[in-house]
Image (spheres, rainbow, N blue to C red):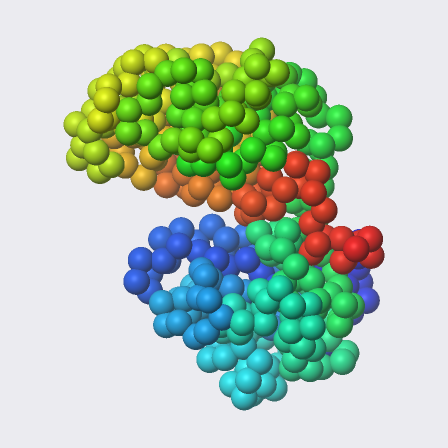
Length: 400
């Protein structure tokens, strides 16, 4: 697929370039609490701006259900982009309306502007391809026939959405540096990774990751399970898990995985339990098969960290997606911190699979540059490793 360097080689001075970025940042009111995705968008925007392009950025924030919703406005992101780019970033108050047209018309060479949350338009995520196509046509009309499209939001390339998929059929499409690097890294994992190859999966629900677990188990040397999903695995072994997160409807399928791949799957041997889901909860460390009734597991225990670290120490390739516990609470962050540090210490080619794992790295103050790659797209990373086609990549490659 053509990439950003190809586009820059063709020349972009005076030409409008529509960039689909992933700016879906967490907010506390109108304050961005983690600007990692904004930071990740900067290299592509800076290259285009420096080359004289008139850059129009489209992105989403949250799930506003197809209508303008003040708390999901991209206004805080526009401010942050302006600070990081050290220039004014005008923002349209709509997606493809009069404000968007006026903002784009006012751009000079090297300028960067942001359109309002593309999900304020219900056609963006519509299941009707004709509706998505109509929105894409309006986006293309705003930037003009001579414009180009750069896909740089890896976190959304697994979705058939107007600003991701249909727009690449309206304008010449190019992969931004972020999308290109993500695809190259993930293809390393799905090709012939150095062994031992260890995958660490956490997060809340086993159902969210069942597909990737099934796809990875025959390919990895060890698959380590933590987070809330671990309690469904422990319950499948016949253990009582108290009031821990449990998906009863997944027990049979989980039991089958344990029966078939018990030598590859690694589960916690102890857990940190709490009497309630709160930062100030009473806590204790118990064996994984001895969770008291009424208590819930919120982190893996110290012996589990040791066992997981021992496995990771010998790894040459590691993929990590999902925290080991409720790292947002200091009392239940030790497991995630311990696993992350073990990955760093291993010296392996390490990929952090975006989402909460990437947030944990930043929240816990871990050195980001000690990991080989930190993805910006958790869901997209998992679907890639599961073997699914990513529509936003396929359309750029012409294989859709």
